Image 1 (tube, helix red, strand yellow):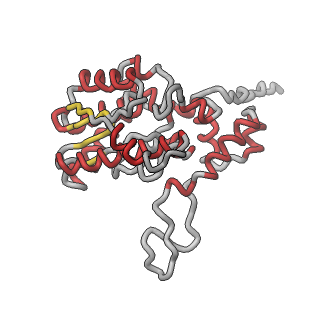
Image 2 (image 1 turned 45 degrees about the vertical axis):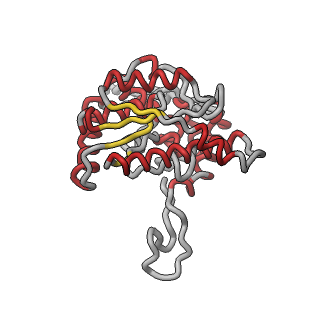
Image 3 (image 1 turned 120 degrees about the horizontal axis):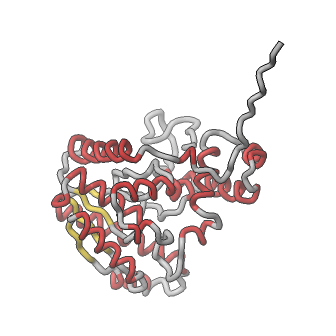
Length: 287
């Protein structure tokens, strides 16, 4: 009797991005439709504003909005502080040039420094938070002036890591990138035509000279995204280590995920009735 040869599954590769791959043409079509539906049909606006930092996330959103609403209906705002990178300003201008959207520049230095005069002991983190919140003041005020809706630019990895300023970066009511890991943002940005000089540069919040996202994280975006992919599906730390992921990197990502849950929700209300806004008994976590 002949026996069939045993077929073994190939070993798991913790360095593979296979699970993070996206169908770029379909995803672009879907996000353009999402923006039209949320901005025009559901909220009654025809125009949008967004902050453009010169990074890949805001650049991608600008490209998507130009497709969804027409470039004449999109207003991008550069909001530099005196320590902001000149390269970031140039890259933001490049996005406007390529997409054809309107570009405005409002320097936030005097506004930020006006407050920081009363906080001379502020460290870099506090100063960065003030800058981020000032940019949202500008963006929401300009949206009122122009009769437009603010659109956010934060990606899923940043949000799961809590790498944003509460009531700032994540404040705009519509966000097309909120369910895309950073590696997926890079892939989609290349597909829609975001200039390579923007896609390829190190990601940075540009709040402190020389700052990069990955140096703040202590892990690269690709590694973090691969680990997050499985943690969000219920895999334990022990299981991920068995699969070949580095234990210290899994622990780092898990700690970030668990400790920043509160930042992804509206303020927690003390429940006094069964009709408490945004609250209910045994609130589920977001992962």
